[in-house]
Image (cartoon, rainbow, N blue to C red; front, side):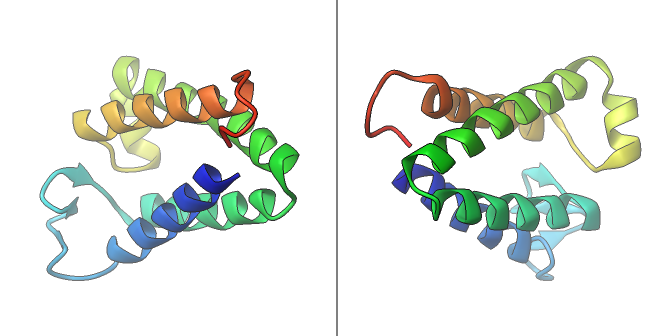
Amino acid sequence: MKTVKLLGWVFILIGILGFVPGITSNGMLLGIFEVDTVHNIIHLLSGIVALMFAAKGERGARQFAQIFGIIYGLVAVLGFIASDFLNGILAANMADNLLHVLLAVIFLAIGFGKGRRMG
């Protein structure tokens, strides 16, 4: 539950930073990740949903992790094989794709892992 809550706050922070000039320049967050308004809103909403699910306890945190692990896995696959399609929806580059893979792995491990205190 703590991990999902922490990631929820990180998503919210990243979503906010995506709108801050200087931190985001020419559509690049920290000069690494491609972002746009849609991407920033998705980060904010992901964070809010993570906090809502985590507030329900261990079961809610695991449910969030399962759902979002699958979602981020699909987004990563789309980013690798259909980058033109993905970029038509939201800005993404290779760094984003790799981060989406990492998030998918983390969320899937939390959501489907056997560990009692993972989420």
